[in-house]
Length: 382
Ligand SMILES: [Ca+2]
Ligand SMILES: [Ca+2]
Image 1 (spheres, rainbow, N blue to C red):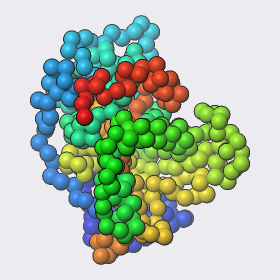
Image 2 (spheres, rainbow, N blue to C red):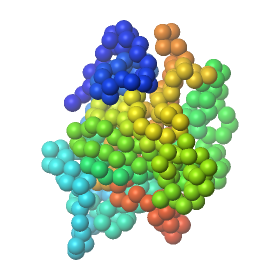
Image 3 (cartoon, rainbow, N blue to C red):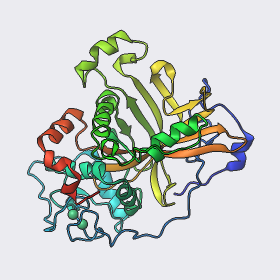
Image 4 (cartoon, rainbow, N blue to C red):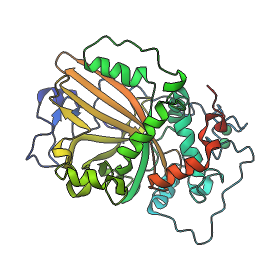
């Protein structure tokens, strides 16, 4: 169901989004609209793009058009089908995925049964698809997201979903966003897409991304409900049970790492319309976070900051295939809502997956597969 905005109601009510003592289900309104609807960013949702966009392109250059390719981002000219291993036990995501596909047979989204071997969650080669999403040029990432179209199935009941942050265009994302936040002219620095800063393969950008993955995202998990949406749990920073290296830090700052977690907050997950192309997306709504950690600072939703009045982290996702969801990571920065002095930035991507939540397994795979950690393996060239 497509969300409808209520801008008049939003303008009439200015209840602080993070005010304590407000019931979770109470409708509250503020700079990003009212809480019974998807967050209203500074950029409007465009009219829905036509279906089939990029269907006749060939992202991985394996000679099979996107609309027919059973492994969209991994070159597999032979299109060999996956063989389900004996004794394989499907997780609850599979049931949701199969049901969603039954209801949306024409969607580009594919379940494990429909995928080629290189893509299947059964044999571990799904990591190549995940890596392709990371390594794809920015323009291709945008096109992949638009190609997927329909939001696809949600994450799955009680399924831990893990992913890594991936930067987007350095200037359009971080540099311009910081300049805007500081009320400076948005001036591009001569760094974007030059080799050390390239978001895919840069000698600086990739280790930085990996450090962030280890230091911040290694504890990040989404625990999600059903295809209908609902409450979603998000964690920041690693718990000691997943990475013992964090033990001394956690011990030193018990007020920040409550119960061993840096932050555990609940937000909402819903279906809505994409700010990219107006078609369906899975919306992660962090306006009314509740939870613990970091001294109560609601990381995805900050108001009353020294330099800007407010910032909302906004994510929207689409399921590429069973177990894999590329999501945009955006920030809506508000200097002065009344004067409409505000702007939306996409500062990165998040490639969520539910096939294997271990960050260590992911990094081991990367180390063991250097060939598959290069854009050329997926047909991507600069
Ligand atoms: Ca292809
Ligand atoms: Ca392919």
